[in-house]
Image 1 (tube, one colour):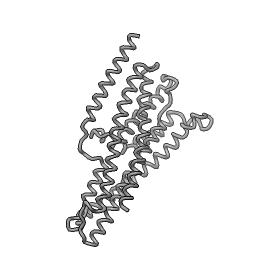
Image 2 (cartoon, rainbow, N blue to C red):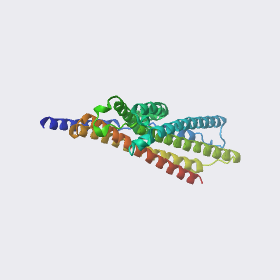
Image 3 (cartoon, rainbow, N blue to C red):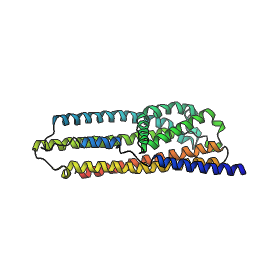
Image 4 (cartoon, helix red, strand yellow):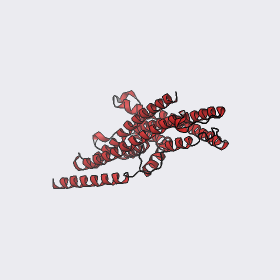
Length: 310
């Protein structure tokens, strides 16, 4: 009894210390914009000149950025298709097996088979998500990619542990998260594709606005132009999503820390395994929620932008 109280007190103290360190680390975000915001700002800087005519260097830069965005969309689309295929193969059998094992072949729900099928989704399809997510953490501005990368990494490692030593885990925590890893990677790639589509729309609108201004040779006041209103709407929407994602992600990380600590101290035996299950579960569920909310916010912002263009 005394040892349990000591461990409980120690877990609370360590969780409080970890919370303080997390808040201290994320207290001062860097002024560097997100990749999408930086791209939009760069595109905005390629606006018409004071004379109302676009220079050839700006025109070439705009075309180069447009081509790069198109190439990125093609690449992310291919990654998303592969991730969706792997998701169907891994997630659907895992879901159906919860209702009846006879509905699907047993080898499809074998953890090792699922691990082999999930690894390409995790490291190949998810590579841009992990790269952008950890970059955002370094900027002290965690976003949806940061949370999904953390959740997917934790779920993948936990699931590998199930493959290696599943019999050592308690009865209720032997379920692998491979299907969830595929789903959240596919969701993250969908968000990436939506953001790139918004950037492409902005580039096309900028091109049309520039062409119209150049053909008429009538200079406009930038603050009063349609292009400025459209870009202001776009950037405001991106910043709104970034602020929401930052607060949500920091909150979830802290909740995961406390869930782990409290389960280590007061959870059922084996406590460490149950605590890992709980902490990873918080990250995975929160990753699902944030990904879905981000998709909704981005689609809503895109509609508002198109409405402002009209």
